[in-house]
Length: 109
Image (cartoon, rainbow, N blue to C red; front, side, top):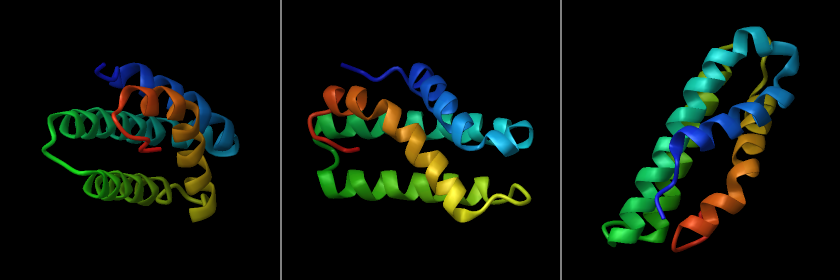
């Protein structure tokens, strides 16, 4: 079953907002963009896993690269620490974990 990237991104943004509450006015556009990129990456990775064009280890590496990119974007917000950025990303991925893992042939999150 293909993942709905838009729905995943909406859920992720809501969770990230809880973590980034003190920075939300500035962080929201960044969080929305990065959540969308993560969701689209998850959809693409899932398709490649199903097609057999990528293995589990490469899928994990691709997801890690996207998470690192999202973290790098979020830490450009003045006053936001790397830890807070990581917590926001983890919160976003945490709320979609069950749906993503159920839709993929392997547990990626």
